[in-house]
Image (cartoon, rainbow, N blue to C red):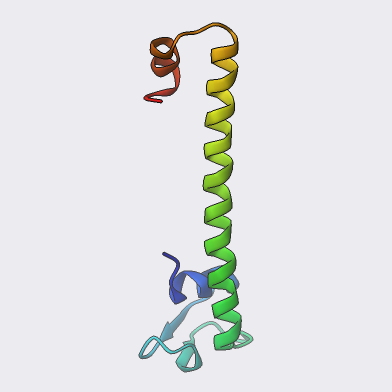
Amino acid sequence: MINKDIAIMSLRPNIEWSMHDNDVENIIWHTPDVEPLTTAEVEVEILRLEQAAVDAEAVKVAARESAIAKLSALGLNIDEVNAIVGSV
C-alpha cells in the first residue's frame, strides 16, 4: 500500500521534510525553497503509484504466461516447464 510518505518522497525526491499528525498541510520543509504540496496533489500521487504497481504486476504475470506458452509450444511437458519457470 502506498502511503502519504511514499507519495511525498516521490513528488519531492531528495528533499528533507517532516510531517505532523500525518497531515500534508502540516509538512515542515527542512530543505530551503521547496514548493509546498497540497493534500490533493499527494492523493493523486498515491493513486498514480498504486496504479503503477498494479500495471507492473500485470506485465510480470503476462511475461510469465507468455514464457510458459512458448515453452509448451516447443514441446516441453508441464514438469519441464515447472523446472524452468517454477510451479505453474
